[in-house]
Amino acid sequence: MSIFRVILSIICPPLAVIDKGCGSIFIVFLLWLCGWVPGVIAALVILNNPNR
Image (cartoon, rainbow, N blue to C red):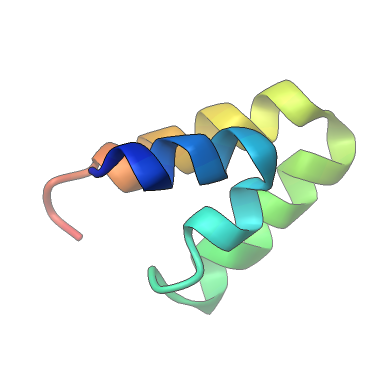
């Protein structure tokens, strides 16, 4: 996980997970609409997952 991805996930979480698949983008976008903090947390968890 690069520092650029971390900064991008703080500014706009759906853009940070754009290469992780449509489902990840959709989940992060919905959480981001519900609130900024849940979207950022979801983006950081998805980016920090070593299996993907």
